[in-house]
Image 1: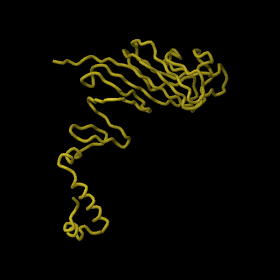
Image 2: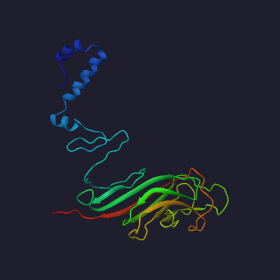
Image 3: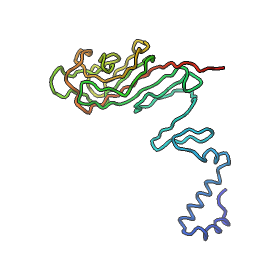
Image 4: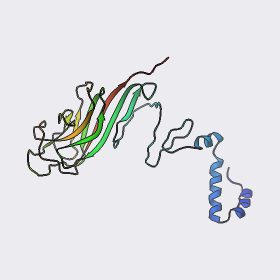
Amino acid sequence: MSISSTLYAALRPAVGSEAAHTELVGYLNAVEFLSVGEATVLDGVTAGTVTASKAVVVDANQDIGDFRNVGYSGALTAGAGAATAAVALRLGTSATEGLEIKVYDETITLTNAVADDTNCVIPAGAVILSVQGNLETVVAGDGGGGDAVADIGIGISGGDEDAYAEFGALTKNTKADAIPDWAVLAGETTLAIFALQADGNTAATEEFAAGGKVRIRVVYAVCNSLDYAA
């Protein structure tokens, strides 16, 4: 059903311009098809925030937060670009208990240095399940001398340069995939991208040429204590 000709004729003189009248009629026709229940779930919605019994609307950045428990079937894909680890799976009845599988995925722009820290800070007690990387651009040394950059490692900031993976080349789309020996981290660990020599396990002293891009993805597990169930 649409606005009747009788109502249209009654509204026309009161509204003013033809354009304003046409817009009003469009709104009325749209609202007419909403049930009371549909209007209720839309009323008072805040973009980017989950509210009980309300529609879910992303904000201007296409973000939304504060879901509690989310169920799914089929594949769950964690997209690229997050600067912090996102929870891909939680086995627990609340946001603070049980086993969490987290995914950190970011593209790092290299600086003129022998190593660049990522934003991936993994807490003590976690277990790293997999580490992957892809060279989004050609990576090169800056030609400043010293032991030349011939490889890239994903390692521990301030520690082992290739603790988790190494690429084996500097060409675009070179990949690194590794499943480390699973072990509980004794302390908080920050991952870093290192310039390596040709042997793949010795640090280079030549610095990266600024601007190269390296994407890394780290999947790790965090075990949180169970809530009191009584």
